[in-house]
Amino acid sequence: MPGPRKLDPSSSPRALLGAELRHRRERAGLSQTELGAPLFLSGSFIGQLESGVRRMQMDQAAKFDEILDADGFFVRNCAALKKSKYPDHFAEAAEAEARATTIKEYAPQLIPGLLQTEAYARAVFREGLPTSAESTINELVAARLERGQILTDPTVPMLWVVLDEAVLRRAVGGPGTMAAALRHIAALARQHRIIVQVLPFEAGGHPAMGGGLKLMGFADAPPLAYLDGLGAGQLLDDPGTVRGYELTYDLVVANATSPAASLALIESVAEDYEHEAQRI
Image (tube, rainbow, N blue to C red):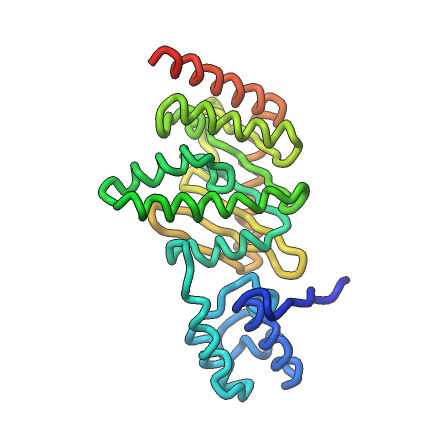
């Protein structure tokens, strides 16, 4: 099995902390499990910190300084991690998403952020924050579009998305915006950059009716699951819990239409929106 990927400490504060944590832990002769035990953290969580997948919290930094005799190194550098362009509940998930090699997502209501067009994202934020200043909306849209830049790599991450049919039918931003948004998804699918399926209304009940689900896999760290809610989110790393959500995703896929049929449906709905936009 390949060893842990070497981090470039100059690439980000998280990479710096991860590399230093690994160095000091190994110098102290501690395993990941042994280091995590006093903090009630799993060995896999320590590995995710060391690989830069997870964000170090200030209380964890203080404990690492104490255990590893780091003279305040982790506390001093942890402050830099608090700055994020994303909401607190999503910041760590967004950072993990950028390092993932595989992303599997079920979207119950909205087009996933990685696949949103600028007009669609603007409509989502404006409708969700109706009294916010335009400058605030602009910042949120820019951050969302920046996330989508990970798809400019031709192969990584492997993105597999299941869209509930409600995502296609809910006219966010109006028919013109929806037509362009769905054409964007279809183009990525036809370029073989993403896998997309639709979970049709006729499928009835399914295991993920409670909300959105994102599964992230990494080359050098255990997988994560992210549960999406209204203004809230939960990032999970317990292996048994993540396996349970992997089964949930598999069952959703089993009820979805094939990629070919899904693409045909997406393009058909996009065409309907285009005709509607022309009549307005």
